[in-house]
Each structure stands twice: as structure tokens, then as C-alpha cells.
Image 1 (cartoon, rainbow, N blue to C red):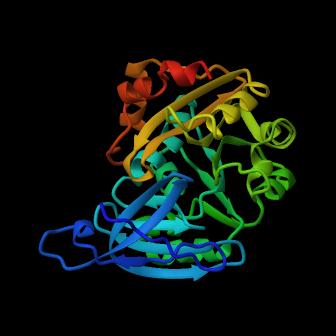
Image 2 (cartoon, helix red, strand yellow; image 1 turned 45 degrees about the horizontal axis):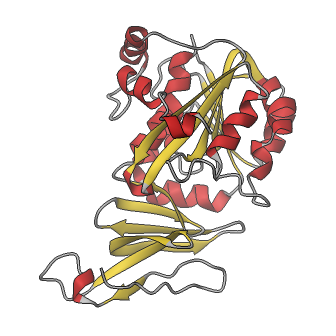
Amino acid sequence: MGEAVEIMFGNGFPEIHKDTSPIQTLHSNQQDCHWYEETIDDDLKWSFALNSVLHQGTSEYQDIALLDTKRFGKVLVIDGKMQSAERDEFIYHECLIHPALLFHPNPKTVFIMGGGEGSAAREILKHTTIEKVVMCDIDQEVVDFCRRFLTVNSDAFCNKKLELVIKDAKAELEKREEKFDIIVGDLADPVEGGPCYQLYTKSFYQNILKPKLSPNGIFVTQAGPAGIFTHKEVFTSIYNTMKQVFKYVKAYTAHVPSFADTWGWVMASDHEFDVEVDEMDRRIEERVNGELMYLNAPSFVSAATLNKTISLA
């Protein structure tokens, strides 16, 4: 593959660029092709062939782009990092949302930290038991951007059960008096010094989040890359931090093709939440409107069976 040259804006946001090398063309009859390039590590990059750039913008907090890629369809990119891709985002969001809701005996209220694109709310609202969903995202422009361009989530944003709050999730959760059956962390990874770092700490889990869970309440969070080479970045530390706060903690993983890695999630509670395979499938049948594209009981059992390298970390 021909070498791709990454051009950076002054704020560090990668520019969409074009490489006219014949080796890098997507089809043999193409003369040129536009590519988006994301740096995974110092010696690793991930490139996407593009049809077009649908939109680019900058909010108070971050840079936002919506790309139309040849392989993954519409792709949401924030601060130069892919957040979700039209073709396979269902893997990430079904894994983030449905296990916790299915393990809870009767989930009615959910608080989402982050989740501005609306996909987490979309999956939650498929559950017939749900009465109220609070989605708290700090960035109004990202929410507006996603409402406008990610039309797959239009119904979720219009649902009367959804309460949208534009505020720091920590401050909002701390001031609320009610408790929630499920709390979801759909946030960026906890990079030290980053805006979400404080929402992954032991003190936050212990002093702010845990008291806001109702009896039988379950907390679930995305936990970053969980591959053989990447699980020690944040996945292992998130799991170990949650084990210091909650009595029962379960980690699980799945491969997300557009992320070019295995991804991880961790859920936790002070009440045991194991459900038999047949019961989990029965709850999916009874509680969930529509067909899940990825998750069923056997696939969750597989996802929660961690390989030797990760389980020993």
C-alpha cells in the first residue's frame, strides 16, 4: 500500500487528504481516492477510503467530522478519533446497553453519562419496561450535530421518555435526588488530564455514582480497547477500579471491525446479577422491541469469557 501522508491542522485534527498512487486506489479503474487516516499508536495507523466529507465543525470542547466511507458507511469522528461507524456501531451499542438491562429484574430508569450521538438512548428505548432515560452530555454542539446528521437516532431524540441534559455528567448526577436502576458510562477513554478522567476514578464511583443506584441497580461503562496488545491501556485499570467499589463485577469484550480492535465493557453491582442463558434469551424476546443484530445469550456468554492474557492482567 502506498504511503499516506497525514496533514494536521494547528489544533491536531487530521485533515482529509488525497493520495493519487495507483496502489492505494480502491478499484482498479479509479484514478485517485481520498483517504482518512487515524493514528492508533506511534507505529500504527488506520486508513479509510472515503466517498466524501459530509460535515466538519468545531465545538467549544472538540472537533467533529462526519465522513462517508466506502467500507463502513457514515463515520462519526471526534478529535481525530472514530466514535462510531454506521456499518457496525450496533455491536458497540448493543453490548454497552442490553446486558445490564437484561440482567436487571425490571429496569425502569436509566442515566447515561455522555452518549451525545443518541445511539445508547436508542437501544435503551427498545426495552418495554423503560419509563425514563436521562442523557447527560456536556457538548450541545455534538448533540445538535448528531441529531441533524445521524438520522438513525431521530426517533430516540424525539421520544418523550428521553430527558436531554447539557451539563457535566458528574455535576448533574451529584445534584440529582432520584436513584436510577441503570447508570451507563458512554464516555471517552480516561486519558489522564482529559475531560472524562474524573468519571472513571474510585472516588467518583464510590461517593457519587454508587449512591445514585437503586436497589438491584447496575452500572455499566465502556472500557476502551481490550485486545491482546491494548487491554492495559485502560480496560484493565477500569475493571480493577470497579472491583474496589462494587461486590460483583463482570467484564466482557467483542470485536468491532471499524475500531480495528477488540473492545471492552464492564458492568458492576452490589447485587448478584447472573442470569441463565435460557432466561436471558426469554427476556430479550419479552422485553426488547425489534430484533437485536448482534447480542443474544450465547454470544454474551462467549463475550464474558476472557482469554488467558486478559484475564490474568
